[in-house]
Length: 474
Ligand SMILES: [Mg+2]
Image 1 (cartoon, rainbow, N blue to C red):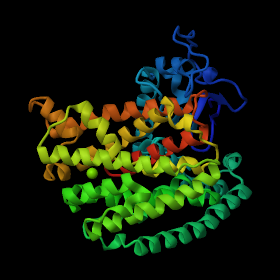
Image 2: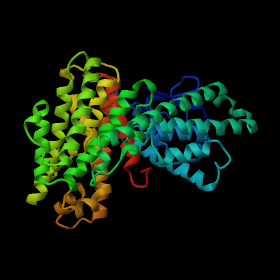
Image 3: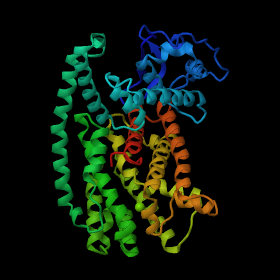
């Protein structure tokens, strides 16, 4: 049997990094028996984040499935770990990883189909890995799945003593206790948020979708430790508020009401100098005003500087980009692809959800970081990825509302030669590019943005890839 393989994880929310090692600490280079080691390629990069392509080069070259590989390929655990590692791609130039991912995936699917794994604890793990690469997950859902899978492994242990090295009752009991204890906190927070929606009268807006549970799931699945309650609450609150505002701009508000809302936010503390155009504007503005001020006060205390102004600017950027969208729609202006995506990345509305949360996860964030290219690039990549995922899903609805999106723009640009289905498939390429570029930036050691903050961008991206892909949870 080939050497057991394990992945070195850089952190709880990040992918396996650096390299694959054997159970004795040796590099994976010696793993597949019968394979000839290939020399390092000239493209070797010593400090490259992610999986080391050069370490895996010989595995990709040996993908012809010749008989000498049989022993290695029958080691299903190794094959599974190799497949998982192949997904840690941080650039489009990853032909070695892509090749490994392709052939290892085929072999694993074949083993599922043939029933070869049916009676093994690996069955669920392989099934899950094939359907959900590491970049399509909410951390807390992963934890629950691991607990359940661990239980399964314990059951199997009774029948197969060779698995004993994979289990530990104490660790399992601790994980279950932690998971269960947190549920009480989550339920209490959800009750508080539910009463906030009612007190703010957001549930009285006839045009607005009510998405509290959806955003709370995203919050608790992402920022799950009990002490980060404020971050979870603001994440869910701003998810609810941005949905209400999105619906106001898309269907619920007149141009006068929308202009009034933008002006009120621009005036902020002097907003009482002008009237509310309607009760709907009053409800929406008051909810934003109150929650931003509360949040700003807490964040400013943590950051030892006044950050409320920044939080207002984040909202203004969103409202102005939404207004641009409305103006395009009214004038029937068809933007270029670049104009569209620059604006649409902002209207996807992750600004008020993710950016304020950065102030709550621990590190101090000076103003220079907020103005740094890296901070803005992290935000752009996450937002573009989300927007494109959403466009693929919501093409019909937006078309009926008279709005263009990246799918219809591709069809228009092709002069009608591209079908909607083809355009949807084409959008997958920039989605993959954004995901890989974002992960590369998050894994980079240097940079102005502290690591816990970078991870938040990545966590949101992972959640969107889970929740917004066709056939996923929601
Ligand atoms: Mg919209």
